[in-house]
Image 1 (cartoon, one colour):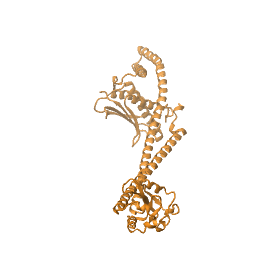
Image 2 (tube, one colour; image 1 turned 120 degrees about the vertical axis):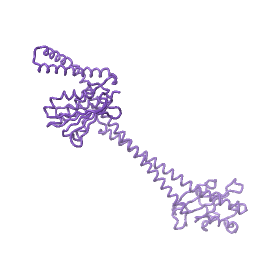
Image 3 (cartoon, one colour; image 1 turned 90 degrees about the vertical axis):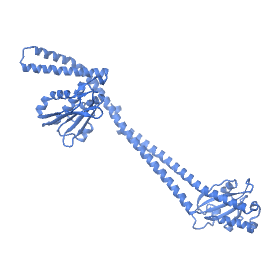
Image 4 (cartoon, rainbow, N blue to C red; image 1 turned 180 degrees about the vertical axis):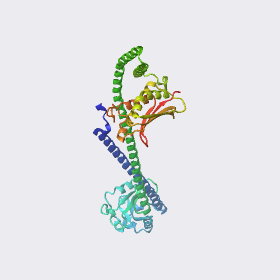
Length: 459
């Protein structure tokens, strides 16, 4: 039985559940961060790339429209190039691009041929990977946060600019087969930057919310699964306990057959003697009760061994109710309990063994009678129930049950009565479920307890 201790209350179970929750959180959090970064990077790159491609096409078209050899931009020394009015006009077009606050024109050798900042003309900056990429014909725009000490070419930027888009635009020869230079453009488009930041924020918020919803859904599934496992575990514990009870009951039932046979034989011998009529009736009652016990034991042992089909059994509910009440007539009279039996229209025949229905009903009536120590009203009724079933309801006017008693009501070997074993209702529910029915109990709002036994009706 120790192997079936509740895992929910064990330190190992709590540790495993905690590890699962932490691992799930880390997995979802990592996935969310990576997804957010990818979405933000993808959308930002595409928006900047679109703007850079437009600028590249515009600048290359200007070179072609000027109707002069573009190679002159790279073959002419920077000092002479800036004095050329036609070339200066091209540089003016470059600096006039929307939102551009600085532009540098590079020769193929990396020298700055022209710049909106005159102090940079003729200079060459080593280790400019972005320029080398552009001279290979590639276009890679990026958002730059101004750090005036990071790059030499960032010196002298306007004070109001803290963030800008930087890209190097390759300038192609007229034949389109060679790169003759590059144009570095610094743009600070407020609307585009604001849109990019807004899109990045939405990507992060959306991914985080999705991760939170996914984690909450996972936790709810784990919680629901834990509840199911706990119920299944409790049923497993009950099954093991009831299996022990069943083995004990089988042994006891088998052992009772010989004493019952002896009691019946003695009662028959006594009935054959010349005894008063009242005594004879009592002796015959003993014989009848022994026969009932013998029939119940035979049915119990047969079902335990063979498990025949339930459809072959029939139980007349109204007759079983009357027999059970008759069996408790002495206790009812002693406690001053009134009995009210209510019948309903419809067939009272259930698809179940009479002995088993009687056993469950006897357990219910016994508990109700014990609850009403100072008398009261015991109400028994049956009526058709949804789903082709018959419901038997037993209500008492006792004090009812506490919350603690309700929680352990159907747990085997857990009884609130000093003389109880705690197996009656547990066995009763198991029998009802095996017959295809249910056994439920609840406190009534006014007083007492209501027990409902449902059984499949005989077709």
